[in-house]
Length: 84
Picture 1 (tube, rainbow, N blue to C red):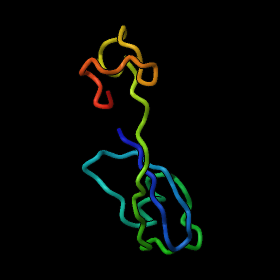
Picture 2: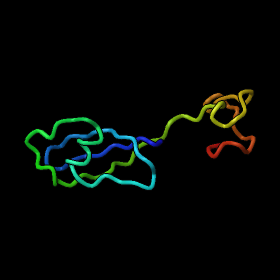
Picture 3: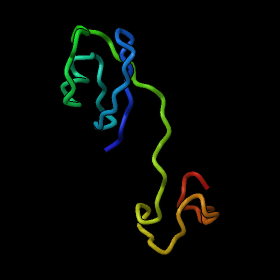
Picture 4: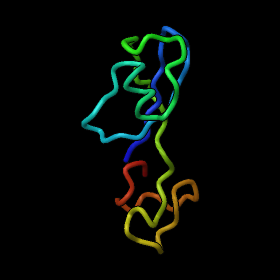
């Protein structure tokens, strides 16, 4: 499941949460509920925005070929890696 960073403009905090790509978090209250954080003094209906973030490093085992070298070692280019 992907990890996303969300920022609340009302308090300036950024929290990380995992959820399916088909879902989104729209309020501070929903974000706090999913992450187990306290609301604090920020109203639960305060809007949050998903931040653009990098992705995880691709490992050869996640591609189903344990013999293929991981990204960053120059082993890409076999057509199996979207970054090669």
